[in-house]
Image (cartoon, rainbow, N blue to C red):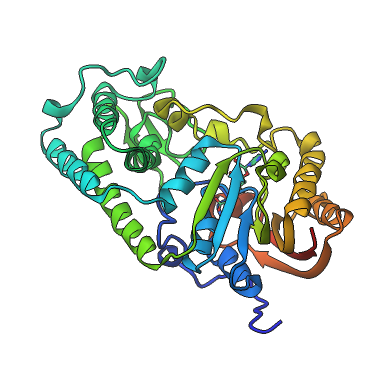
Length: 364
Ligand SMILES: C[S@@+](CC[C@H](N)C(=O)[O-])C[C@H]1O[C@@H](n2cnc3c(N)ncnc32)[C@H](O)[C@@H]1O
């Protein structure tokens, strides 16, 4: 294949490249570096093709497809993922957002006057957020209610990205956990001492800065992106019922050892009042993993007429090979296998050092 490049490590990339465009809006565990779906789309998509990501996560594939001029769709079971993917690709009311950012700027200089009276964010939220922080977050959410839907979601996603860092949760845990004392040592960040009672947290100022960056990036995205992105909240085991087709699919499935996105993002679910995905999240129970993956692959085989690229972590138990074989079992023909070192993903780097990139030809 012309233009093929065999090295998929992308070892020389820094945050500037892996978090460009709208990719930095919100953290998402095990998200793609955008260079992976981008390369797949560049290698296999032809003009007019539609791109699919059945485990879309925070929408990395959809963003890259749109930037390269392709329409795309994706599914994810997690409502927060879908909200993030929408916010990264949707149009907003710029004037209303600017007004909102100005209000935040003013509130940041005089927080006491702008905080809400109520500190209630969800049941027992006082455990998770200091009173002054909770009242500022309440004021932000109340004020965002007046915005149009897309603009409100934009603000909520910006806020969601900052929630854990403004909460009492330990900074050195992926799943939010309250330290036994307000003062503790953050083992992930140079053993610095954190004191939840006294540390400076100005939610208005933090959100103001984040939204300004996000807004500039969204304007840049819309200036270059000509493809339309359609993120759906849906179980990938039922994606064919959407009645959509695709010619290029690229995805990285959830991990098989009890990865729990619901717990990782529990503060966002509670503060934003989102419905939790529950047991439909694949990977919660290792013994269901392969049957669940088989069901998803069967659905992809129904809607895809073209190339399917599966990016999956290397497992000492050979699970990646079992999933590869499942694809072949559904009539997909293996064209290429690449093995990449995972260098740019902080979370996975510890647990999984390498992943496989399998490219199949699939005729629906
Ligand atoms: C490794 S992440 C994908 C990350 C994505 N490539 C990105 O760049 O953000 C796997 C995703 O699968 C989703 N997932 C888990 N079970 C699912 C299901 N039954 N249907 C659809 N998505 C599911 C999780 O919510 C998670 O977002």
